[in-house]
Image (cartoon, rainbow, N blue to C red; front, side, top):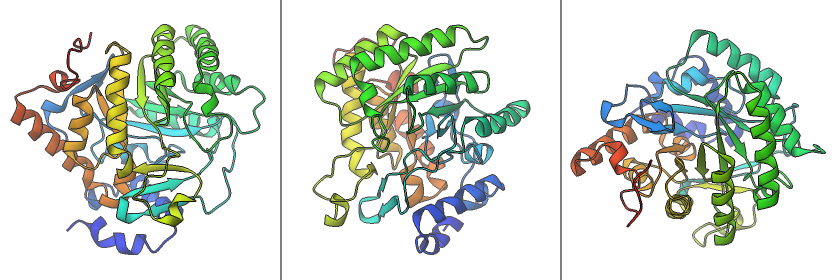
Length: 359
C-alpha cells in the first residue's frame, strides 16, 4: 500500500481545494516518489506531438498546477509532458467558494473555479527560473482571459507574448464552461479571428512555441466540423480533446445534477474517446490530437490512442488513485502495445477504419 493510499481517507476529510493545496505543496517539496510516483517510462512509450519528443505519451492536464508551483515535482511522477495554468494576464480570484465537488462513486469532479490565477507575470517569472536549469520533458501553458476583458483575443495574445520564449507549447483554452463568454470563441468566426491574431503575433516572436487549441466535449457535429476546418487552415499544431462537460449523465447523484460547473473524470471516458475519433477523421489525421477525459488505467489511454490520439492527459483520476497512477498507466500501456506487437506510432488511430496514416 502506497503512502497516498494510507493518507487518502484523511485528505478526503478536507475540502477539495485544501487537499489540492497539500498535494501541490508535497510535490513542490520533492515528495512525489515517496507518495508512490516516479520511475522512467519504457522506451516503447516514446511518443511525439508534431516536433515535440516525449519520453511518455502520458501528460498532466491543465488545472492541477495552475500557478506553476510544482513543475519538477509533476515530472517526477513520470509524466512525459506537463501543462500548467490556466493563466490569465492579470491576477484574478476566480469564482466564490465552494467551487470544487468530489463524486467518489463516479471517480469524478465538478468544478467551477473560474480561472483563478496569480497572473502571467508571476507565472512567467517561475517558468524563467525553471528553464535556466532545464526540464525533463516538454512544458506548456494553458492560456485564458480575464473575466473583465474588453477584448478577450488581446488577452490571449498577451499571454502568448509572455510565455513564447519559456515553454514548448501554448494551449488556447476556448472550452472552459466556467468563464462567461469563453466557449463562444469556439464559433467559426470568433475562432478564425482569434487564431489569426495569434498567428500574426507568433510570427514576430524569435522563438515559436507550438500552438494547441482545447475544445469542449459538448460541441455538436456542425461545431466540430467547423473547428476542424478552422484549425487546419490556421496552422494550429495540435488539438486537445477535450475539456470538462456541462452535461449531467444519469448516473450522477441528484445533488450533482443541479451543481453548476464542468464535470470531469470517469463519466467522460467513452464520450471523449468518441470525440477523439471524430476529430481525427474530420482533420484527416493531419493534426496531432491529445486525448483527455476519464483516463484511469492503461486500457483507457490505449483506447484514446487507437482512436487517434498521439498523446493523452489526465488529472481527475490522480485525486482518487494517487501519484502512483502515472507509472501504472505507463506499464499497462507498454504491456498492451507489446501484446499487440505495435509501436506507439503504429497504435495511433489503429481503430479508425479506412483512415490514412498520420503524415
